[in-house]
Amino acid sequence: MTKNELQQKACDVRMGIIESTHSAKCGHPGGSLSAAEVFTYLYFEEMNIDPKDPKKADRDRFVLSKGHTAPGLYSALAYRGYFPVEDLKTLRHIGSHLQGHPCVSHTPGVDASSGSLGQGISVAAGMALSAKLTNDNYRVYTLLGDGELEEGQVWEAAMFAGFRKLDNFVVIVDNNGLQIDGPVDEVNSPYPIADKFKAFNFHVIEVADGNDFDQLAAAFKEARETKGMPSAIVMKTVKGKGVSYMENQVGWHGKAPNDEEYETAMKELKEAKEAVCQK
Image 1 (cartoon, rainbow, N blue to C red):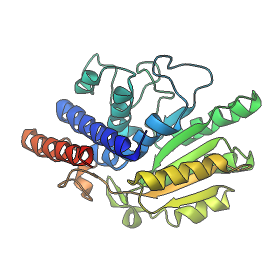
Image 2: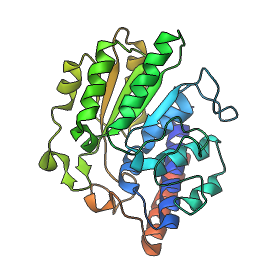
Image 3: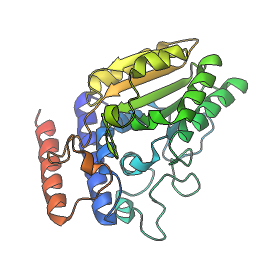
């Protein structure tokens, strides 16, 4: 896809996030919005996947380690064609296949159940090792929050992946600077993030703006070309990106927009998409 097309899809993904959390009257829009570009890039450009065959053996795998940002993943899956976009309005409703955290047995396109922070990266590392053991060529990607890096299990998984030289494994850190209790550097600072992954034998790629498709494209290309060690893409993003009143506001970590806030957000996102279309 062209950069312009990716930007339009990212707007769609953001509107899906707002639509679903508003309908659910709960959920996590802030960290879903900050990762909208990486969700879009993975599912529309980077990964070898087929919505018509969600379980194909040679598909690339994605594990949403920060499982609470399921609205972002669900929106990307819906717009990629795994299930109807209309389903997003059923988020967290009784009987819906779109629950508050991803479930591998319910939702097409979900490769692993996740939500207990720190565990997703371990599952993903195991998937990457499995590919090595069976001489398969698929790649494994996992997305972590920066607050999630406070979990010790993250670093056990990193130690394992680095030791096993899993060069088919890419860890992505959504460094938006905020977690549920406030700024990450005030709650329990994970910094310096890049140096930590380097210490566990990762090739580290720092992205100054993780909401920019050119920078993401360069980072994923570099990760794909890296041999003999796993890669960590540490991307600086904006929590609540794309919705003016949500940007860099910790209160939007886990709160749904009300009717008035929904209308404002959707108006801004539609205008943003129109501006992209006119370029």
